[in-house]
Image (cartoon, rainbow, N blue to C red; front, side):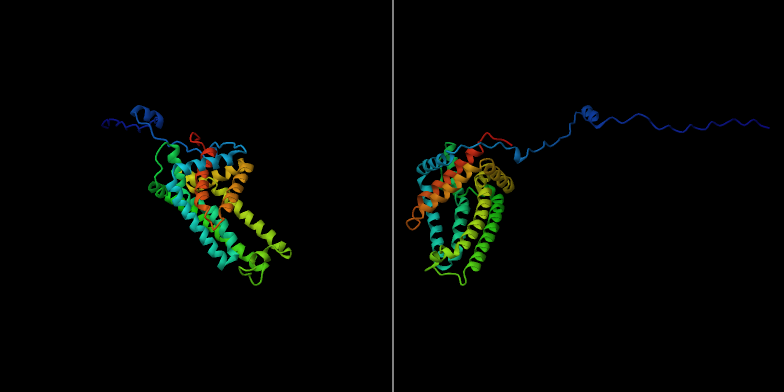
Length: 291
């Protein structure tokens, strides 16, 4: 039989056992280093100042100084406060049930009107000229955050107003007119109404003041979101409860006194409080404070 040469079969290729280089080694070999976005610090790590009891008086003095440095801006915004006072008086004459809630709304939503005053105080602090035109446009860089914050406060104010009306409707039937409103409200038989109104109003006022004490100047200055600003304002009030309560009482007292006669005092006191609020924010959150 013819000899048949054995044909050699090719050996199957063995899988390579060499491990692939790790991504880090490959990156170093090629010189490419992937970008890793740094972790953003939390707003809760922002260092806030521990205030002393003399802070509110100091802020009012600084506000008066700023008012004298830019009287044109002060008079313009003061006149806007005067108009708000006239609106308040008109509401009192037509719908007294809303007047207390509306007056508190003006006191607590006033910082939005003071936005231009915050801008003027910042310009003075930075050694720049405080321009009225520039202060009127101070809302533009942070319009979105300001709008969200205003919306939240507006909802709270509407709920507050509705709660006030319900308390009036339950306590008085019908609701008293302007002639005998005060006499009926403070009549000894209506002490339950007074207590209920003060408790409900105090709860809403505390919530709104806590959220907005320094939030609006902080949004304008640091251009942060509305939630972070509101949380920082609440932190400042929790960290300094006595001083911030005194500051809120100071604002309420000065604005209340400036309503006499005929709200004319708001032309001066309104801008002073606006400038003072900027200095309150700046002391609570100093420029060098970082999150």
